[in-house]
Amino acid sequence: MGLQTIEVDDVIRASALLDFRRATSETTDYWSRRIKMKSYRTISAAAILISFTAIPCWGAIIDLTAAGNTGTINGAIYQQGEANAGTGVFPAFLGIQASPTESGYNTNSPAGVLDDKTGTFTNAITLGQLSATVSGGISYYTFALDVHENNSGADRYISLDEVRVYVGGSATVNLNAAPPPDSSNSSFGSMVYRMDAGADSTVALLSTLSAGSGHSDMYLLIPTTDFAGHASTEQVILYSHFGDLGVLTGTPPNPVGTNTSLALPDGNYDTTATHEEWSYQTLPGPGQVTLPTPEPASMAVWALGLALCGGWGLRRRFRAA
Image (cartoon, rainbow, N blue to C red; front, top):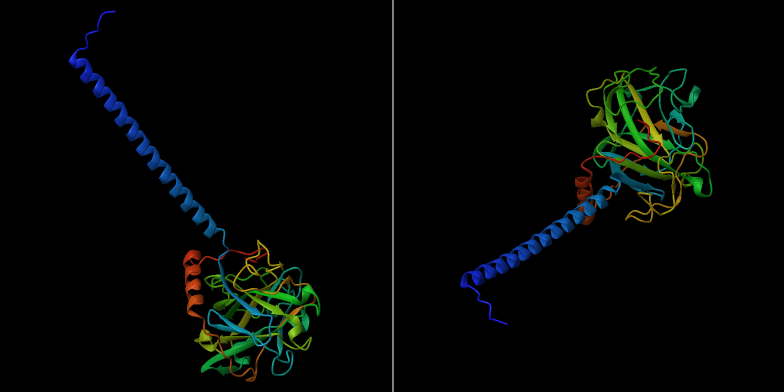
């Protein structure tokens, strides 16, 4: 077999083709790796975002299921404590009853609204009927809540999930729906306090801490400065909503319970028995209230949660508008 003659130009062209293929292969591998890395980062970022958005954005969760507990929400004090509701010092002005949740506000409307108990249980009040109490150098108007849940078992508990207070509305307002969370309805007047302003908060209560019916389970102290500019003759309307926590067993999807840093007792926080009753203070009563100071770590967690929530509260089940 004769020898084949290979021209120098052919060798150069073959070598160049080999270098081109090698370079192309390396470039392809490089960009393939980059694309995979970006994909991994995208997937990781998405997973992190999903994990945060899956966490309910709650505001304050106050546990008043132990004697003497207290906490604050939007400047108001929620304190476990007992007063003789319905007496001359704490006359009742709002009764609410339904199941598994309930809501209502005080009015003189004879037809009744929402879950109000009509008759002597519910009536309009004026700002001049309230008496201020000084606690820690701050002046407050005090309301007392008597919850009438069962005396034993899981149904001893109840959750207070919203409070809105208005001044300047009508004594006979009869809107059969939750009042707006602002001052847009002149029949209710100006909203001076809202528990859920900025985030979705809740207060857990235990009915067996008090001596029974006629004895309150919680004080609500709202700064008198919230009512500044209003006359003593103006109407005060208090709206409240109960029972949204439902049954807590310490397992997902409950946003509270033993899965969080605040472990509320397991139980049924629905409204399961008779009516809940609000009264107001006409004479100084509760005395000084000592408020807990948040630890630095707690403040950091709160700030992080607020940043993640962006001021938005996840609406709970059965929540009134």
